[in-house]
Length: 144
Image (tube, rainbow, N blue to C red; front, side, top):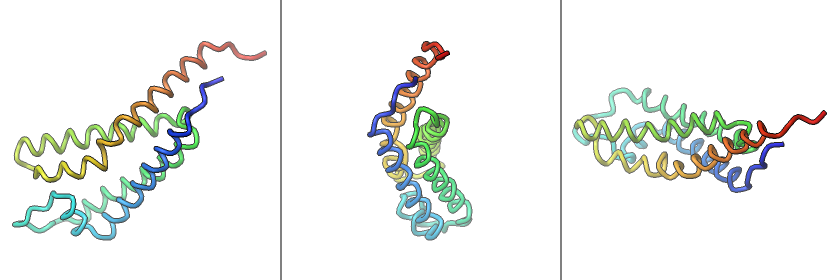
């Protein structure tokens, strides 16, 4: 029998899901405004391809649905949490690289705080819990 998930894991994944759905909808519906508030809009340049920013919003929104789904059984649906964690890890890394090379604005990192960084620890703890639960289930002999 696997280790039961803690209630906080459900809450974290549902909150992350709702956040992603709201943020994604805002980006899809108001691409220029949301890009400007993200700190990434260069005042001297317009947003040339808002559809690309809207596509990011759509992807973030779809992740929101997946997080809510995963919240009901984080151990079973750990791959959803892992993919989300990887996105929340590599997104800021990529943006930081863009800032370091002068291709992105430093202000863009502000968006990473709420979209990515605050989720690293809880998603990491959920993944750790899922891993430990898998070890327990492997060590438990099947019931005859």
